[in-house]
Image (cartoon, rainbow, N blue to C red):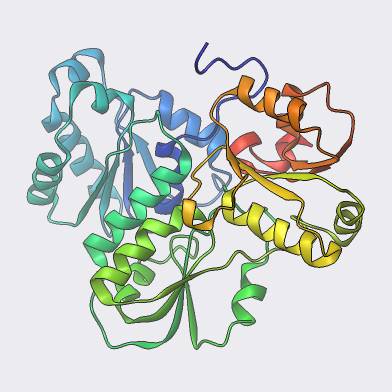
Length: 347
């Protein structure tokens, strides 16, 4: 049965990805739902709930949703803005507006006319995956705020979110290692100014597939070149795990595509062999994939693939091992927040 899951839980959806980018930017973010999707974000997909952020549920009642009473939403936003010094307002879609066919452009105009502040709308629908939500939020923020300014020795970093990177990853240390006067961690640094300055960036670094579409948009609009590079820390491939992998003949690495590629490259440099396959459940860009790399969509397909290939070693989130209890060879944990949430929660 298509979509049937018996062992692997649902992954972080697109509305959660969009909310993650907007979380620290100083706006009022409204999840356009009845309460459930916002609860999912707060309870499972957003680890920074101890940090101040204005994120609300629209609290749509049945008839509000059925009749598409957008004026109700505008009234609620107007009340919120009276108490919050918001730089902008953001609307994030969920299955409710997707089903009733909400006109986001009209909604944007209504709110801007009423509140006189910039509005960003992200037409996520809650049925797609987190990386698509991140991608959409990036593009909408750049369309709304990016300005064309003279190029400076500034590096922009796209795709740096808690979904793809370990909670202990040291972005400050990584930024300090780069030969630039300034580093803009779009969204992650909590600065709306990073998006405003995007037109003056010398180069963008794409560290996950979620940042690819935005990088291409900025290249087209401002001529900003980009490079794909996924930095690795000890959390992703510790020296001891690298040594274990070095001894294995046939390995499967499962994570976000750029992370998995980086792990594969390191293993191959250590072992001088090319016997590593990348498996991915999320965006897999053909330009950055090798022949033999595999994109999974169904739990059963994943089980059948692992059984047929008989890997000597698998790098993956622990959650995936629930689906393959028959696998008895070497397993090396590679935590993935979008799959299993916080490491602390799963400890």
